[in-house]
Amino acid sequence: MDTKQLLEWSDKHLMTTAKRNPIALVRGEGVRVWDSDGVEYLDFTGGIAVTALGHSHPRVVGTMREQAATLLHVSNLFHIPQQVHLAKLLCERSFADRVFFSNSGAEANETAIKLARKWAKEHGASDRGDIITMRGGFHGRTLATVTATAQEKYHHGFEPLPGGFKYVPFNDLRAVERAIDSRTAAVLVEPIQGEGGVNVPDDDYLPGLRKLCDEAGILLALDEIQTGMGRTGKLWAYEHTGVAPDIMTLAKALANGVPIGATLATEDVASVFTPGTHGSTFGGNSFATAVGLTVLTTLLEERLPERAAAAGRHLLDRLAAVQKKHSAVATAVRGRGLLAAMDLATPVGNVVSGCRERGLLVLTAGDNALRLAPPLIVDNATIDRAVEIVDRVLQDCRP
Ligand SMILES: Cc1ncc(COP(=O)(O)O)c(C=O)c1O
Image (tube, rainbow, N blue to C red; front, side, top):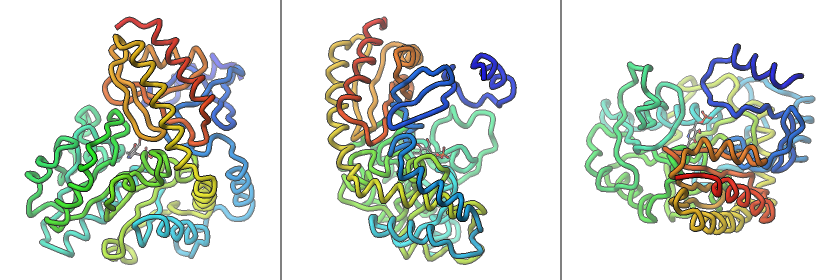
């Protein structure tokens, strides 16, 4: 189909919630994708940190074919073997004892919020329900999760917002300490803020939050929707910190692009959900969890978190060299594993377009940062090619 016509129909018939790149992607393989005119790109967006195994991974494709031809969906009125196996593997590889499956990151966080509130009510006073979240964080677009997202730009026009959320600055333990009171149920935080700008907190931040939560008898919920599944160089970002949460949410890379969400919790916390308290028609269906199981198994067998740690060091080194070279337009580089950002003193939109025109797809984050989140299978030579493109684009930029 004619690309121009397709983009016109897109403009005309889709609700304009996203600022889209003016290309239509039709095929992918590994780190590469092709548009409808046959142009090839390096995909350093990873579908916004989703396609950890890259595009069209043979094991993922194999599972999808097989499961689609066997059984797609039956509902949670029945036991679903793939769901059980995925939950078991997630629990064996994390702090958690139990899992609830849903269909997206926002739903995984909705579940975490409901779980934390119910736990707090059963373990304290009936008015305990407040969730403390961090400024600059991102937790989703449903009404509760957009309210948990402490960024007013996402709230405008959607009021009245649900109550029960308190915001504090990120990476500020004193502020959390001051905010905790008798109504607090939990602290919900990303180990590294992804959408907010790839903000990496101090090493003592998560341990400090853990301590504050323990002292107050409240829950620590980690949103690992972007940082989980090996992206930061460990399977879960909390593994860098020496402490574990009570609740963790996953989505994005868990099934490499097949919609899925998961809320993991300890036995004590999970026990407040009883039959009928929460649910999802599609959540954890045979297809999504079969793919999730293949993705997690492959990720572990191929030691992709370790690979992401090494490749991430290479990426950050190379980006730091480019930033130094163009320090008038690129002011800082940060990240962990294969989640990296570069602050720009030139409009990030121009850099995104410049990269795309030279064959590299990239993301933005925060106010004016470039964000890179390539598949975890990316090799150093491909990283070098991508960073060379960023280098050339910055060369042409004015501060
Ligand atoms: C940390 C984090 N939490 C939650 C979400 C929301 O996930 P979804 O878009 O699947 O609802 C995102 C999406 O970017 C995210 O990065």
